[in-house]
Length: 550
Image (cartoon, rainbow, N blue to C red; front, side, top):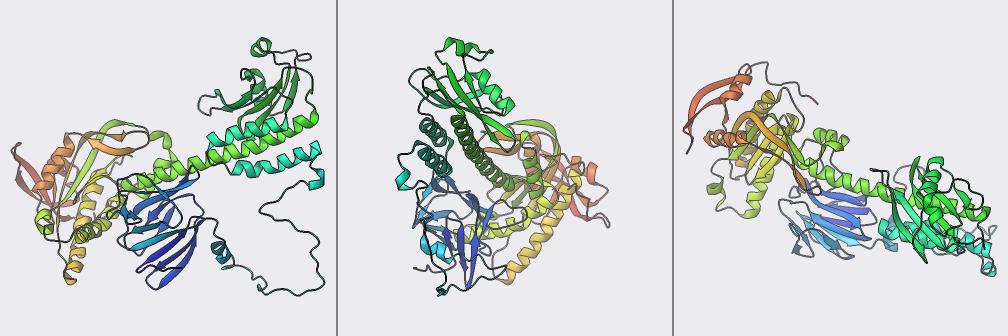
């Protein structure tokens, strides 16, 4: 194996990982088919943690399996992601193949084969637990291997029985789970189910699979095979699903005949429900236009058996898709909300709809003073590293005080308190967060000066009032934001604050005067005249902490 210079991470997309950073090497196994590359923090999503690489963003890139292929997409990381030395940030999803090299921060990820025998041979399942005998060859002459089979590729039917119809049916049934498991998309799986149904019941004239829409309860015809028009009796399908029974029907002896059956030439048939974890997913059926080769009990048992396998495969696909969507949604929410708020939103996903509501919130705007002049002669990597060092301190403070990150604007942060969940103490939380942010950055700057690095100080402005807030965009790419004049006025207070200062509006002062030590002042604006503002000099004794609504 060729080693790469610097911190490294070798990734087997079979989810066995060997992580190398400096002189330390770790073996990791990841079970998810959809995970995020980044640096871990509390309640992070399914995450491949590249700590202590500080040049990796918290949520750096996403890797997932789709349509039988593996993909990677940069999650708007600060330093970008290279795939085979090509920048993919802002380029959407890119296909991952064996041998690809991913560069993220100071780490390198090499993609290995999913079916690599060498890789599988190295897997160690005994880091914890009982020991097994050594792998030295055993010489016990008292044991003879009488017969063996290749477990990776064997025929369940003996060669001498290949002409037996019953044995051939057994072979087909045994192969169903393996064949269904190979299909990674429902659009591939459902036609395969019908194809196998045709092989099990060749005497039929019409074969079909219908799924129940969980939202509308409508029956959707998903796949079928027939010489004439496709046929599914909704009356019989509903009966099979409601009674959770497979049955054979016959026009000659069935009293309750639905309209669609009377209008068709179908005479007999079998229906079997798709049942999975106490849920009814749909139905499969095979029907015939004549009595020749009429269905019997064995046919019914086989179709019911097949329905169980099909239901398991469909349910597994739906579960995987739900997990993938939840992983993506969690990653998006963690960009803007504290982990606790993000988890509460995930628990009530019905609330995550496009649209907004109008209510009073508190806006905090933090902007670094003189940032352009400070960074004009700095190396771009040093600029990004400085911002990441500042943001890594500021964002957790905002989250601790129940704030939400509306957006990052270069060197500025716009945070909201009191949304998306209401908070009766939003005003106090915003002011306490601002004071704590300035104190924390003072400590960071002291450390940077000792290292001979440039330092910067933000000015912070806080205002409150009624805004429209909610999720905007599309159903696939929604973002939380706030809109209203309050946001603009907050920017004026922020612009009037010197480095290291916190300025609050009169509306804020009316609500937090009991806990703050202030000086009154006037700030100039270009088009709106002078604004009255209050400089927060400190928090009164005994008011340093406000009980947060966790």
